[in-house]
Amino acid sequence: MQITETSDKKPKLKSLDTLFIQTYGCAMNVYDSSRMSDLMQEAYGLRIVDTPADADVILMNTCSIRENAENKVYSELGRYKKIKDKRPDLIIGVGGCVGQQEGKRIQERAPFVDIVFGPQTYHRLPDMVKEIRRDRVNLTEIDMPEIEKFDHLPKPKVEGLTGYVTIMEGCDKFCTFCIVPYTRGAEISRPPEDILAECRQLIDAGAKDISLLGQNVNAYHCEDTDGNEVGFAELLHLVGELEGMQRLRFSTSHPMEMTTELCEAFAEIPSLMPYLHLPVQSGSDEILKAMHRGHQREDYFKAIDELRLHTPDIALSSDFIVGFPGETEEDFELTLDLVRKVGYDSAFSFKYSPRPGTPAAKAEDDVPEAIKDERLQRLLALLREQSRERMEQQVGKTTDVLVEGKGKNEGDLTGRTPDFRIVHFKGNPRLIGQTLSIQITEAYNMSLRGELIIED
Ligand code: SAH
Ligand code: SF4
Ligand code: F3S
Image (cartoon, rainbow, N blue to C red; front, top):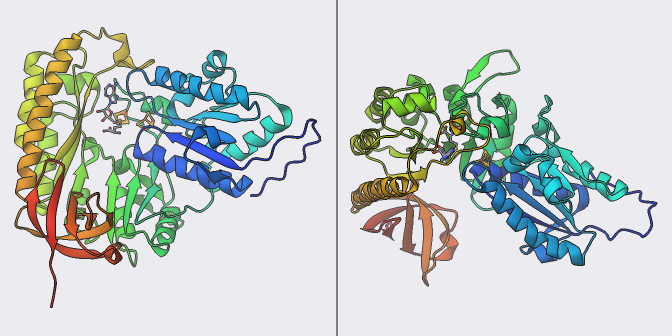
């Protein structure tokens, strides 16, 4: 699509040349921002700039997962307003999950915002920009259309060695604390043929580490063109066996849908990397029930056992929430106990914060802030200790490292192991892009150091 502007308006509008995108939130937002940039480059030939002051179009791709998301957006918008005061032709758009959640309220509070859009309407950005330049109106586009936005997006571009492909989007789980089902909408899976074609393009363009994205990737199910139902484990086989697929990952999966086929897939598909982010949130059955997670702690242990039966070295990570309404000291200790029993390589931990319109927000946020802080610190300390121990266990091992770029120190290169650890080592920059055997010599909290094994 190339948009030609037939503006008979006076004074003549300045041509659009530059775009600045500010991205918050999850990997899917990062993916969406790159698609927005592809769209705007294709339609208007816009060039990406690093500073908002240099941009003709500023887009914010927002996240509303935790506390204060809305306020952060408004304070950032205050800074953009100053730019717009000097250059009234500047176009400001607010997209993403806060856009979806707040809708028209954004332009009520910040009337200088030209466009508000949601995660399901960004494919209309070029048309929205055209419309506001023609009619000088404010637009809000946050309906959740039935039509597939993916059919309206240009082919993805690859930058660097990593690529991302959205395979499903949205969430039907309605965990009581979470805003995602309201901002991303219902679960929709993309046809397997489209996913395979997008992966093919990424591989052909040089991607060596591809991640499949979705709010709950293991809820994936879609018919192929022959009418056969394809589930997530089957999709992994199809994608993982594409010629040239070196490293395949996915995120995020839900404990409720950990099938045997999925647990086995890590051992069966050589390109599927031994790393799994499987958020559990809490180790207490009472809290899991109140969160509406749909499983108990025993189910989680069973899934982990089954994974480790087939892939003993799989690296595990999780998300945790402390201070959910009603969480007692005993509940919290059950979370610590679960962490000790599972043994994580990494994790993300958050203090509960009520989100507007979610069922949990109706209950009293009754765990005092000081207790939330204290629990978070205790959990973080345990997780840090575990992750450090597991890092130490890597010393002496030889592992395949995909070299991603130069390190911070002179002469260093940096890359990733199959289980997603960062490794620094000395090497020639021409090795970037290759997968090399590295012997691990030292462990730190967040990374490893190693030596290149020279084969003779
Ligand atoms: N779909 C993923 C999670 C997406 S949100 C899953 O089901 O696991 C990412 C993480 O943010 C969640 O796992 C949760 O730990 C955290 N989170 C979501 N809502 C939250 C809230 N209201 N307060 C604190 N943390 C929250
Ligand atoms: Fe949110 Fe739960 Fe859906 Fe994850 S599964 S996105 S936590 S509602
Ligand atoms: Fe945030 Fe929306 Fe992603 S709320 S975490 S940007 S799905």
